[in-house]
Image (tube, rainbow, N blue to C red):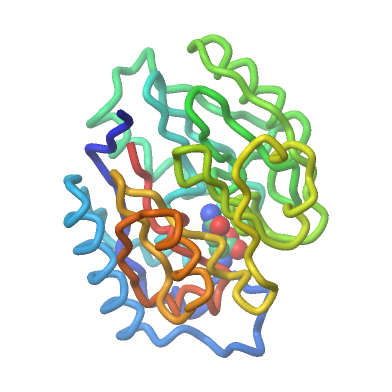
Amino acid sequence: MKKFNHCIVRKPCKAVCDGITSAPELGKPDYELALKQHATYIEALKKCGVDVLVLEADERYPDSCFVEDPAIVTKNCAIITNPGAASRNGEKAEIVDAIKKFYKDEDIEHIVAPGTLEGGDVMMVGDHFYVGRSARTNEEGIKQLTAILEKHGMTCSEVPLEKVLHLKTGVNYLENNNMLVAGEFVTKPDFAKYNKVEIPESESYAANCIWMNGTVIVPEGYPAVLAAVKGLGYDTMTVDTSEFRKIDGGLSCLSLRF
Ligand code: CIR
């Protein structure tokens, strides 16, 4: 049975208020509330039986609390990505030391220019990884990721995105063959073989849930998704992520889980 033992997170910085957003109409994140929500998130992860390495806030990078994007962590290797958003690219150098605490040097790989790739575009299903071709992750980045995963005994397939920021913005795997799908992912043939749980448009943000050792963490305030996840038989926890949502961040973006 799959088990996560570790998580890495980074505290939001004050500049989180200036994170990249596709939804400025939601307003800017409230820093104090973001900190509280982040602390609650860490407690929820710990309750699921993992240790959590908390990295210090980094004011140089407004989006740096979204540690899922500069690295990919697998059972066989870790991959430092090359984020496609210019204001986030420097985050890749700042995550390396944390990754080195858990992986041997020979098991740490890198995506390099002209390849770009962000971890939010990468979804793990056992030894297979789906990677979204998005505005942040290009063809060359996917080619490099595929070669790295194959070298370490895993496989990869590409999913073109048309509408959302990252692959995991709209599709997330909950283990046991269960897949949450929203929007453009509902009809993608790539996911036909899974037990797909279709998320209504009004709750599409909550397609980004995380499976944590048998418990599924669901963002607070999405009753249809919570009921659907409970209906699958999972224990659930909810965490309010309202401040991160304002800058397109969800539950998965806030941690590396391995
Ligand atoms: C960004 O646009 O990069 C951040 N404001 C949000 C990143 C969300 N990360 C993720 O979905 N993995």
